[in-house]
Length: 482
Ligand SMILES: Cc1ncc(COP(=O)(O)O)c(C=O)c1O
Image 1 (cartoon, rainbow, N blue to C red):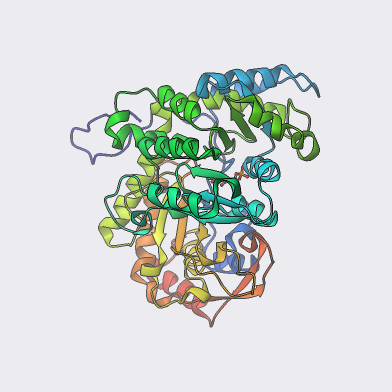
Image 2: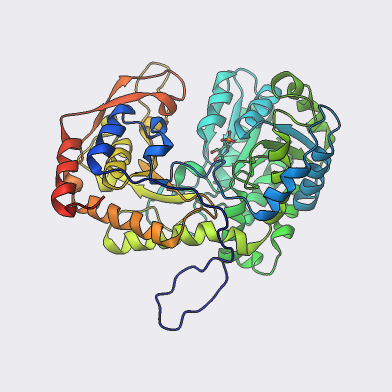
């Protein structure tokens, strides 16, 4: 985005790219939307894309590619071993992070699996600002435990705090001492902290975490999947970053952190996953798992055309005009809804706009999954597909009791460079209507509950007939409109 001042019009974000390939969308009538969400077991993951108007489920692997990325895919070298494509990925990693040791993996969670296999042993702990679903699943699967050390300010839904993802540094030192450095598998900083609303971590905090790890002889790991948005916030909210280039920030982080990994579905506008480090000791320790779980060391389960797109996309991640689009559209949506009184996570983060469902539907208890209920209500009201990020996304405790989420969030992800502002305005409009009718929304109960990562494919049913009532009210208020 560029900082263009409007003369008479409302001040809105202005894209520095144009659309050259389009995909047709369908907006089903409300009665059909009601039917589709119920057929999908009230789980937005189980909706078919043909039945979705705006797909705001995730920003993962659904970002728009640039013309340069698409062009690069034509020269992909699909040799099993020693592919030139991998050399171009390595060159891009070197440009962006300055690191020379690179391991490929088929996506972010695959990198997490490798990291966990290499370093997590039963009884060990992994310390982090906040967990991510797949990260935690891999650590606990191997008998490890996740300890979250987010600062208290991170869990305050509405505030002016610019860096809610920061780790509590005193708690970090105390926790390392409590367990003993030898029992800490690693300390993981998640940039753009996903499950608390895409909230950034300051450069100052990341560097301090790395220093503490160094002092205690514990490995520091950066999950850079959401680093692109995080760097935008560093540049715009943190004084010491204002005059640094994006590349200087990436390089500084890579100099300080022992290991960096990321999902190429987010960072790099592509697919795949990468682990990288300045220190070959770490990549050597993890290397043996790549052929075992992923593929040979020069593709790691990735498709070569996606790797070419990643190489170009990573370099585009340094360009402020590209990387500001997501956060500025999210900010627009959050402000529109906030002005109307809709309880949003504030300040706006990266990745998507997040509705605080504990306030949106305070009448729905945790064990009736308020955020999942709001996700189904939004689909009924608009054909927009969002994602539950609350209690349903948690794992049950070992004794089978629910683990209630700290925040009951409904996420409207903003895939990068994908939507137009009129679509974002439509989304805001339908959520305003839903907010005015929020007392109609009721809870959900399990029909089929998987044991692991249940939010992906579990099926739920409405408690009562509130969804039918909601659809009826929509028809009354909107008449013939879709
Ligand atoms: C912070 C973070 N880490 C890891 C992952 C896992 O990446 P992937 O979806 O490519 O497996 C994600 C995906 O959403 C993420 O947001």
